[in-house]
Image (tube, rainbow, N blue to C red; front, top):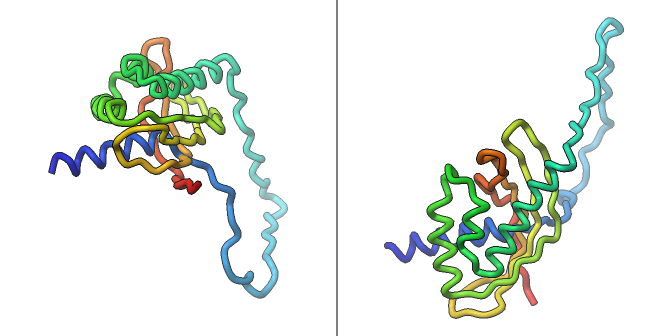
Length: 177
């Protein structure tokens, strides 16, 4: 039972550290017959204004990106203390992340490559960061499938520093060589 739980934790952590972005595809089949409908607002009704994307503070964007880069650097160097320093102390995954890193660092040498890193939004003391990353096995005695993962990290402030609070895998692609 413990091995099953540990395996799921490892897979979850690997997913967090390696989610890919794939190009969109058209749905199969042909389009539906007919023409599109245009809705015209009544003369006395004003159409809603276009959504304006909030301008992000470049200094804050750099701070947030640096935390993600530090986290990836730390796990690639198997530096558990440095990696943990990038995780928010109130994160629900802080303890399981430590256990997962301990397990993986003892069994695998992985290579992490960030292909895309974009701060999507900053709202007060919370930010959303999308990361496309490739994780490849260099060596080790545990099973591992190279993958590309697209992750959405939620960052929160811990005092004046940004830290990783939670992560959601948006897309996983297993690579074949």
